[in-house]
Length: 209
Ligand SMILES: CC(C)(COP(=O)(O)OP(=O)(O)OC[C@H]1O[C@@H](n2cnc3c(N)ncnc32)[C@H](O)[C@@H]1O)[C@@H](O)C(=O)NCCC(=O)NCCS
Ligand SMILES: Nc1ncnc2c1ncn2[C@@H]1O[C@H](COP(=O)(O)OP(=O)(O)OP(=O)(O)O)[C@@H](O)[C@H]1O
Image (cartoon, rainbow, N blue to C red):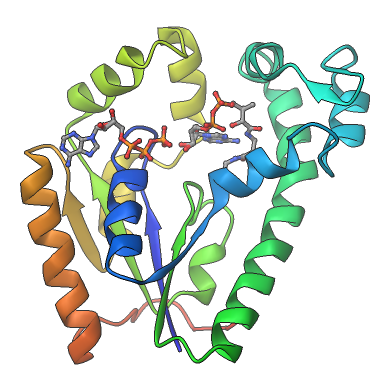
């Protein structure tokens, strides 16, 4: 079985690309969805988060807006939050890979925003990076109205710069043009996956989870 990492900065179009892979029948592990599941009412991460940010969990329910505000204004809190969540996400990822291998999948996709930052690239045979001009990225995120410009800057400060991410990619998917154009690029990649011609990772030693 082969593993394709899919990553990119906030708002670069990861979920949109992941949905295209899913539609083509490829199994996709979604790290953001995993985080949300851990933070659901009575989710497994809530006790630890409530201890980290007192008042953020009331009667087993997380105040996500408050957590976002606190975490994105205090680097120590976001580090603490990552310390709670990343090991849980890593274990879920390992279970996903084991299950897919057992089921005889030929390719799976790992959709992980912090793929390089957390070392998850080590389990990937190839990495695709979604990318768009910074101006478009900013406009997309701010248009959603969930984050202030200062909060967006705090997120960007914790992510690898786009240029570096692109340099470390095996494939770059441009999402700054139309959705149709992105679809064409994903189709091309799917064809290469099928034919076994995806550029392989030369720089890192593969270590399957
Ligand atoms: C900070 C939180 C509460 C903000 O919640 P919110 O609903 O605003 O955002 P959401 O979870 O949908 O994430 C949106 C995007 O923000 C970026 N992002 C989220 N967490 C982080 C982080 N710790 N570092 C860098 N970027 C991040 C990613 O690009 C992600 O796709 C939440 O993202 C969280 O609990 N993050 C910590 C866990 C984490 O590191 N997640 C990243 C995936 S492993
Ligand atoms: N190829 C594309 N063409 C046009 N718009 C796009 C394209 N890809 C994504 N978008 C738009 O950009 C926004 C962000 O896309 P998406 O949710 O896929 O990004 P993301 O990288 O998963 O974001 P996040 O990191 O915040 O989860 C959405 O509003 C989406 O409609």
